[in-house]
Length: 142
Image (cartoon, rainbow, N blue to C red; front, side, top):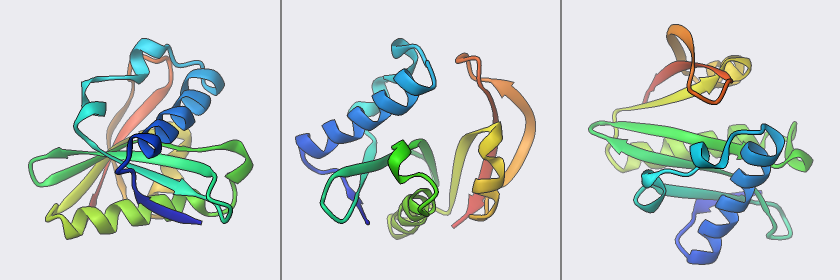
């Protein structure tokens, strides 16, 4: 498995295809809520398997000294392999190299323990982000 910045149009499209499969098709998030203006300017990361096939993705939006991580998605065939943690560690390491002092994300409530194992701490109450799925803000120092 490999995680790299999606620098080509094809790599970014692979990221979008994973998001479509996981969020729109699997989790039934309305398409209008999945895509936003940040997609044009944020950093997209693509995880590929040993054969080079797309397996997971995430993105980072710059917010001052904070790297906002979002749209973390792993295709079903690669879940339980450690790929999600690999993606997160790669993003956090890259964010630190880019000068960010902290990372933040809006975790789906069921995933709070996953992000907690990576050093994120939950803050505030659970909330519905508009998708019908409960979330909670989490932050980690880089």
